[in-house]
Image 1: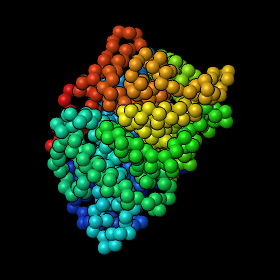
Image 2: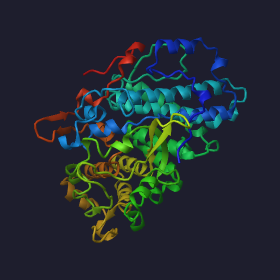
Image 3: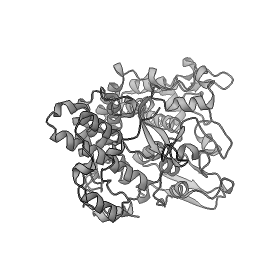
Image 4: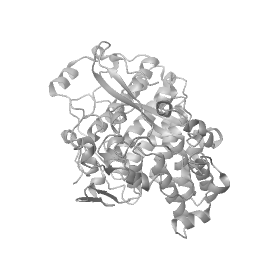
Length: 497
């Protein structure tokens, strides 16, 4: 099930930095407000907010840039630019779906919807009735800006955030054709995100949602906060927000039962459908995104191969067992049942339209890892081990011949960690375990990129013929995605190259 598209009467919102022609912008600005649309009820604003989430997919380019992608060779084709360019650490050509430009514009479209909703709410005579919608608009605005600053600016570093260029934090609807904006700093953007998040979260009530998993519920906002404060390195708040996602802070019952015999016996298509179901307790926030990732991720030239498989799922792990995840396909088409595409026709009788994927934006698994990582940094070793063992109990098996989880054999301990990672530092071993587990968990989901950026881990890509090796070092400017060229019209400087 996916969120219905916005009613056409709300499509008047000017899209920040979108590739609109000057004439279309002029026509828009010449319309009187009452000719564009009228937002005069709680229901209208609630419907508008269905578009306050980026309807675009970042996975295609973040996964290709990461160490989860390898070159499958000429047998896999020449390479679509939206897959090839990020793998080569080059600015991605094109503006279509699954490119950084498309994602940038989608985020600012979502922000425009949130700002328009807030503008209506702030002038309503019955503002109290819009409390839930105001909370959703603020948190959604914070999320879109957070994703933008995480991709198009350097990762938050408390020692440099006050000088690192950020992205424009937009808080008002646009009413001119080309408005000038400042990037300001990463620190400023984080301050504004935190302001919107902390103001919006207490207002959320969830009563206005038909399908809550497609909106920022209180649980989803806490999940977002756990990621935000993890990136900000405010670890006490990470733990507090992670604990608030589920009743009693108990995440285990909500994890996907990957190693369960019943789950493992499910047919591929059934498991694919289940992965992004709104009824799946592991899914905290889902998004409908215009994307061809679901149909293409297994066939892209630069992607998951047996070499990457040997580094991840088939590699030895600290628990001493095997991963319960199952892959399908051959070397050129390895895949997991994670994404199901649906096709949206341009009109009821049309035979053309756009492909959409449902993407999990926040999951129980990520919240668990956020809490575990924060507790590791806080030296709460027992709490970190508890989360890691809870997770392993839903993922690890003794072997394919004996596909069961045995806690006595597979229990993760500090002794195992020291031995496996050959370190005297339990804290560093715990962090290494978390990063290794997350890499496996989020294969094909693009989240590995953010860990590589946060920890400044180098990435090395080598072509299949071993003729070319490209290294992305810790301070390489290409680790920051390029801002769309048209943004310069609004006074926004491009990222250095």
